[in-house]
Length: 287
Ligand code: C5P
Image (cartoon, rainbow, N blue to C red):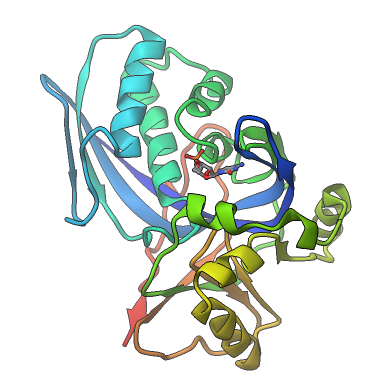
């Protein structure tokens, strides 16, 4: 039996550089894992089973955990079966990469349970076959990601930052947000300069997907304004939304239908998975 935390991610900046012939978008983004986590339990068994505390989440072949199990079996050539139980805390359709983190955590766990047949580099490459954001989690938790998001470059750990994740009731589907994106409206920022700004301690947070997400769900723009008005110096949507992360000395919003999760940046050690030693699960609150 192996129990691991599966962290959420934030996009500290997210630049969309263009649309590719394969229909995906070329990205340049600084990804960071945070202490908002799911918990996954793994046990080798004589048949495969996937269960989840959230009944709205399908546990069939569409679930990234099930896809990761099938991927690991195919790539490693090993014959095994596994029971996986997911304690879901990370909100869905939130831009927090919860499903991607679950897939990465599953690949890491299976590799441990099967005697480490794969290197971390192999797991990183394999992961890209089932999703764009999964490879990132095999970094140490801070990485500059390009291509579809699957090209991962390590970045030195950033200074510890406290934040709030703010999630409105409605979620956003990633393809719908990308479909609304008007590339001509984006600011032509140089992502390498943005990366430099974080490394030198003068972070410049932005997300090129905010405008597209606001046109799919106009209430998000209002929420951003409300978060700024509360006194946060940063209130930025993560990924394709619908959640925001807020940094600064302010109290989180108390609105019906909005859930707030306290979190900090969370990195892993080269040999361990995220928060393996001790992680205090953040307690969300909502009205
Ligand atoms: O790879 P993943 O399954 O996470 O992507 C979900 C969807 O998000 C894709 O089908 C595509 O519509 C969109 N996407 C994109 N460009 C990216 C990543 C995702 O257009 N770089």
